[in-house]
Length: 182
Image 1 (cartoon, rainbow, N blue to C red):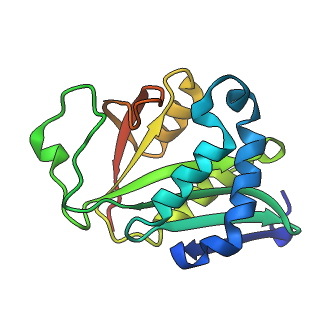
Image 2: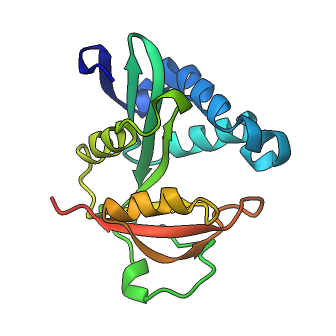
């Protein structure tokens, strides 16, 4: 990876119309196999989720390209005090579930195209995205059948909090939290 050709950009919800096609194209490539067998992972369903997430408070997206070619992105949004941990299928302490408008950042995606995996770009995207956050902690979901990905997040400081199924047609995910330590 030649650092001189890598560009990292940060976007907010106001920028979504300009970058949505790039995000969808990366998703379509990364999830092509899953989309062929599970309707939850189709591009249409992902685009619905992307738009819903971008309409939430303080949506942000870190995006990386190399010489103008999209490489990957990470995005998420702020949970509000009104958020309820729907879909959490395991017990968690009540104090862990209490929300304020600045307690939890929902990290929805960290996605890197295959040719650039293992190069540190996922960590770069993650760190760039979180550098813009005011929340106390970050929350993400990882599929249990991806233990290497979960181990990566654990090396980044995330800890297991339970099992979550965020949508009725979604798979069950391991739910992980990490303090942001501003």
